[in-house]
Each structure stands twice: as structure tokens, then as C-alpha cells.
Length: 354
Ligand SMILES: [Zn+2]
Image (cartoon, rainbow, N blue to C red; front, top):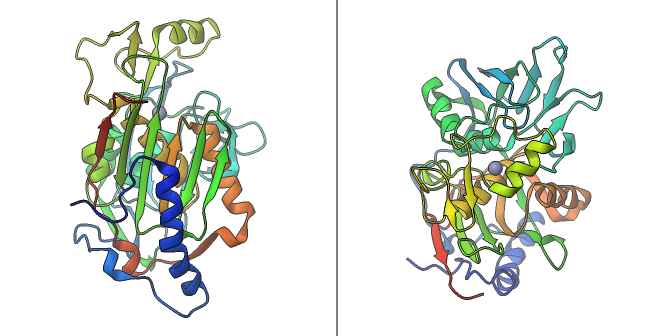
């Protein structure tokens, strides 16, 4: 079904109309005068989301850090309502430091998203795990980790969704809170851009445009509801060009990187024997990264994210811009309305134009 709110992959035209359509109802709602227009939406029964969730039991995994190459052991533990996602460094160098997975704890975004406690204890490459927790609907979890980097696993979020499913996810007594976008926020420049726009439900779209025949212009969108993340996004792996990987290795990075945990491209060839998991795996992975980076807001965002050649740095800047402007968002308990959104499955567009 083509809906009124489907982005037309021309984010600016779409965003402008969308703002006009939607922000009025949000403003009215903020003044306590009106509720949102339900006629634009339909419910998704498979998205029970009024109450916070945590894991039923602890679960453990091991792997290597993408950049450090070091073996890391990680334990995901159930946590009380309103805890959020909190890392605890259990190795001697980490000194039991607690680092909440929040936008204002981000200390580095050059190669991946790194959070820190401000006193030099960090956890890197958090975005795929955080995306997996978001996709699995987990609000509260304590993550004990014995090194400075989340294991890269297969380079996607699927192993983390699997971990959450193995542990089981259960509802808690406290109602969820959500961040509603009340007006458009945009960051970026002529070469890259990220925006948040008022909208129904939580949705993401992304455009990549690399100077490469496989990724010239590649667009996709997703509503974060039901199993959509697990089905359409979670398995998309991180990717890089061979010459970049070689350069990173020279700089002492990507030591744990291999064809087991990244798609590597050389010329117009995919070096991984098994090829791609999706024809448009790259843009799907950029959506995965964005879901993880945006969940660092501390709550699910009700609105639409659009990234055009964006990355971890710009995604984090977008959250800083939103939190710097108190009129741009509203933090309050989730309502039935928030569970209703445009039910897009992933909508790929492989455009030969542009
Ligand atoms: Zn990534």
C-alpha cells in the first residue's frame, strides 16, 4: 500500500510536506488541545510496546573487537525499569566503570561510535549492539564487558537480536517513555545531511551515494515496528573498500577485521566468497547504524530519520541539535497512538539515476 506518509526518496520535498501535515497536530497536542490524527495510521498488533522491557535472564557471548582485534567477553543482564542501557567495564583497566549508552557520552565517532565515562574508560563499536537491542525492543539492560570494544561478531546486528531472543524479553511494570520530534531538526552541509522530522511511529530512511558502481545511488526506508528490523535490517553487515582496510591496518586499526565480519569491496568485486546478503546490503547497514546511533537518545524517537551520506558523527550531532532545542522534542509516556505508524516493510530503491 502506498501511503500518504511514504517518503518519496526526495527527502526535502517529503520532509516539507510532512512537517506541514504533522507538526500542527503535534503542536496542538503539546498545548493539550488535540490528539493526533488517527486516520493516517493503522495498528500493528505485533508491536506490543506500552511497557518497558528487559531480558528474562542473563546471556553471554564472546568475540573479537573489530579495531583492537582483542578477544572480548560480554554478558547482557536484566535490569530494573528506567535503567536504560548501561555498560560496565569488568576488566582491571576498566575498573568497574559504568557508562550509560547515551548521546552525551559519545567521545569518538571517526570509525565507529565510542562512549566513555569522561575519565578515559571507553567502550567502542556500540552501534550494532544498540541497534540490535532497539530492534528487539529492549529498554533496560546492563552489559558487562571485559574490554574496550563490543565484539564485532559477523559485522551485523543479527547475533545481538539472536542473543536477546535466546535470553527472552519480558515486559516490566513501568510505562515506556518516548521522544516525539516536534519540528524538523537538520544537521550537515553540502555533502552530507541528517534530519529528524515529526511523524507517526518510528521510521528511518537513508541514501548513500558513493563514487562506486555498486553504490552510486542507493536508497531504502524502514518503519521500526514488528519484526521489520530483524527481517530486513539486522543481517546487513558493515562494509569497506580493500584500500581503506589496508590503510586502517597500517594505522593499527581494523586488526580484528576479516571477511567473516565485514563485506570487503575491491574494484567492482565483492571479496567475500558468499557475496552479499541483500543486493542493497550497504544502505541497509547504514540504516542499521542509524537505528543504533539514534537509540542513544535514551528512548525510542517518534518521528522520521533521514540520512543522506550521513554517518556516526552526523547522527550524534543530530541528537545534540535536538536536545539543545527544548522546543524540538517532547519526552513523555508512550500512548496507543505512538504504536501506530505507517507499516512499511523495507522499501529498497536501486536507482540508476543520480
Ligand atoms: Zn556499522
